[in-house]
Length: 184
Image (cartoon, rainbow, N blue to C red; front, side, top):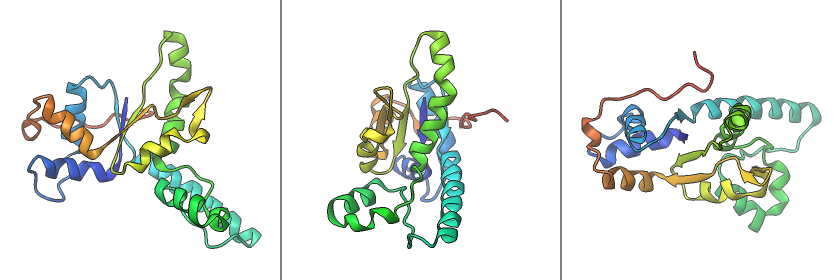
């Protein structure tokens, strides 16, 4: 199973000659399924969850008087920068997970019973625009029962290379919509 970050959908299209700004997520879904993906999700669902949780956290901080300002936790490079260089601001970072990790937790919970019944393990991959997401997926707080919520993170460039090496003619693909995590 894959989840695709919003920034990836345009960059992949441009790499295959589509006009800048064209949303190529449907072609990317088709390409991933041709390469063996069972399910492909759009991470915007996770982004929506993160926005709602961060808004609730902000309102709670308003009631309690801080700490302010409240910084987003969506960028793992930003979090790591504060951990290494300015730890006094760590209390200002939102406690919410990034969209990638928020969605991964939802998928982990959704597939837990199915995996147990099937006797198999769902492998969860994320396609993200930044290499820092690889480090984020490996963080201890995003592991449960000894396994990460996201098993593998591929960058935009890595998925572009995989599509090219697979011989897929990306621009000729019929688009396919991403899967819906909970149906309609």
